[in-house]
Length: 272
Image 1 (cartoon, helix red, strand yellow):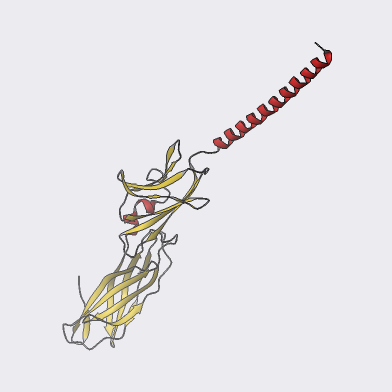
Image 2 (spheres, rainbow, N blue to C red):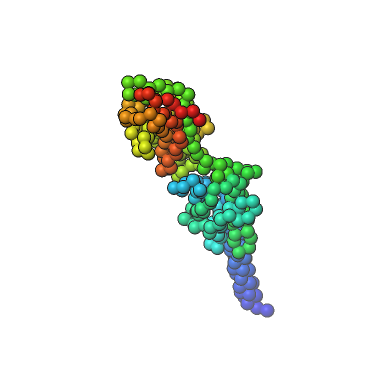
């Protein structure tokens, strides 16, 4: 074989070997990059928040989810699921806002709710508990009925009437707003007052000064108040008093406070 021809053949084979070797490295690097990319596609949640909005009635609340996945890729989806005693109480397909899954559900007043986010892709599915009795995120959202309970109450132990003025001299008052938060804010009492009624109509009112919330989320105070707009009354006619508490979520609580009976130009406090 001609030596020049032989050298030419060797040069061509060497070039081809180098070319195929480079292609092999590129393919291997591409496979490695794809493998690393696939490794980051892990179903799971990095973080989440649950908030609530109370209704105008104390019968339930809306619960809102915002959940950030460990990673997100096209084709992944999520469903917000709430169970009660093992049954699905509510569920909603989550929206993707570019950084988190969001969804809202309406829940009637009940205790024992469990919250989950079900993540799914073409190949796998994962249910993530986000608020359950065994691992609570917010207990008030688990026991919604209990957390919506609210009341006001007053016990009047002493009063006196003189010079046309009725004075409350000794009483204790309690106002308990719902513990469930409304839009992330604690529900507070914005106004409290006692009304004096005669023949079904309000004749006088005493505004009450509220202290700071106690650690259990309510108000406790001793009350002294006076009412000077006492109407002319005949014997055995009655005045009634009622406590009202207006809450920051628009709810109004009320409770009877007492009765006074007209007798010989004076007022006698009713018993029971």
